[in-house]
Amino acid sequence: MKFIYNSSAGGDFIEIDGDGFSHLKALRLGQGKRVDVRNLRDGYSYIYEITSIDKRKALLELVFKSLILPVEHKFELAWAVVELSVIEKSLPSLNELGVGRLNLVYCEFSQRNIKINLERLERILISSSQQCGRNSIMEIAIFNSIDELLTYKQNIALIDFGGVNLNEYEGDKILFVGPEGGFSQKEREKILTKFALNSPYILRSNSAIIGVASRFLI
Image 1 (cartoon, rainbow, N blue to C red):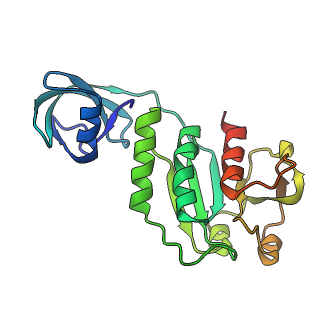
Image 2: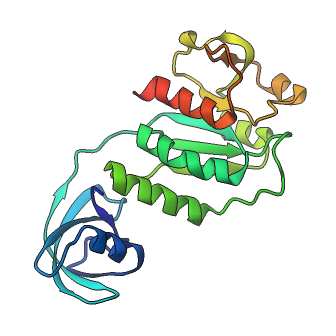
Image 3: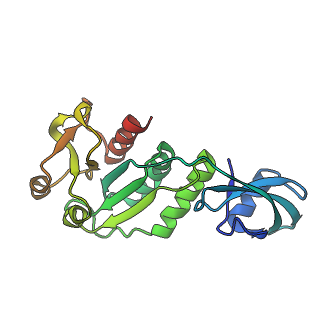
């Protein structure tokens, strides 16, 4: 655990309870100890001293703050909506790899009954950032169709069979990974640029997107 998240970090006095308090207890921090607390918005690290602690909460007083050297997370991906449990398990890896924005798109072969709770995904990303030290979280956007995605940006390329070697990718397009069943023919006709992964195997959708992110961000 690199730091503790609290939306009120930056105030002279803050109260830590809930998950944040559980992290304090796990770190065996008591009264008089100092802890790094961040709000993941303003780029600062706030060092607080624990002034009091009981069974459910802790009160902290600000000692000093320091600006963390900003890291630009410009890499953007698109991913067809798949099983929610698969998305949730993949988010920490994408966040830790440094993806700046993930566009989740309902494709023709996506299950329409999947309802995405952005607040829950944000909590997962916050936990990931606390663990890896990222002073922000990956942005997430949801699109109801490929048409909506293309309204957002035109420079999209599919990760699909029959595409050109991914070695030829020049970073000028958002790479789009499809669902388990792949893209429909109509969707392929809407986005003509395609890249193929250099794998002799059929990858699961989450393996493909993590593989793409790893390739360009590590």
